[in-house]
Image (cartoon, rainbow over all chains, first blue to last red; front, side, top):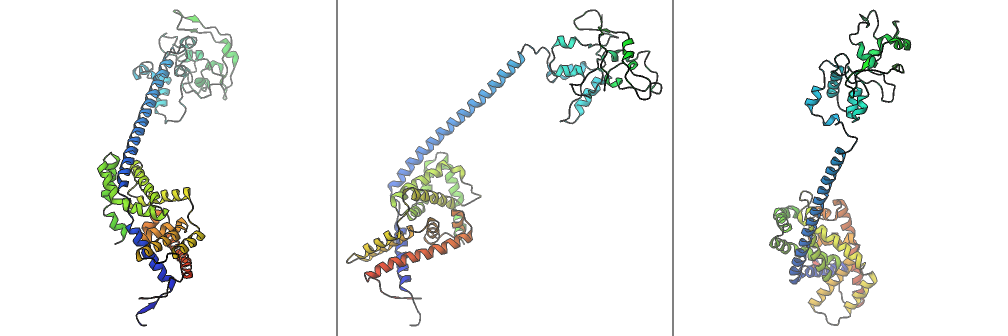
Length: 250
Length: 207
């Protein structure tokens, strides 16, 4: 028959069944009581969530307060520690640091260079500065020559302004250097006596030979007269005991 | 215009209602519920085959919407797609937890039970046919069932269905084709069971 497409019984059955299924699904509706039930459940869930949020906020607040209190306690304990008699350099005011420096001193220049140095590199400092930073107690620092014996007030011109070696290496005492600045027995010019490493390491120049290649001569140090060393705990200068010659710099 | 664009015209209002509801406005939540409860209930009922389970899932869906509103990102999907996704996950979880669905033997036995009715009326016959389709649908794997329900019953586009099930459009087309084939096969077996009782006749339909 024209205009009619024969359908298989399976298709007809499937179409009828599907149409019935669609009609049944469209007629399906949630019961009206479900709305009140959902609203009650949502209200309870919302209250529970608000309660949980408040509890979480309270715990976070307590955690923050506890952290602050712990930090304050740690800071108080640190500041009241018995071995902490000298404030570290980091806590000193800039004016204090400026007053402790001489503009021409290598320590000041090295500190300035340290300030200008890019971060991440080791900071060159003198032993005195290192003692301040490390919080070395005053008696220990006073056992070392701190002031220039010429005027008794200025800081010792720090031997080896830039500490070139590790802390574990042998360090020359700054006593010999203190007297060599402007000393009459210093070489007149660099052509007569080449500058040995003592200028940097802090040993006496007479401990170095005048050969083209400087060689350390401990006998020359032995003959050098002992210089008075000023100590913070002494009102008058006392002669420095010199039992051992200073270690040669490498 | 696709259904996605048609729905997205109303999306900002849904999002605003959801925001108000999360801030404690129960009127906004009630409006949101009345707007979406029908499709939520129908989808859950089609997926689980049970009105009771669909009611529970509907309640759970709206509670999840309210408590986990922060998880909805309007930039990622439409609000309706997000709701369908929640219904799908909860329905799958419910079906997996309770029972795997009727077996084919159970389906055929139910078909024979239908044929035992002596004098069925049109209404009863429609309900029986709908029940047969529902059982056949429930016997399908959920990855086919959900796409048949979404695309053929709820008229979602392939793109929207892909967003709901989290698959590509190609995968949706493939699964839908396979699911329809399986459903047709199951319904044919039900019809064979009907033919045993001589109920169905060969008919011709206009083109």
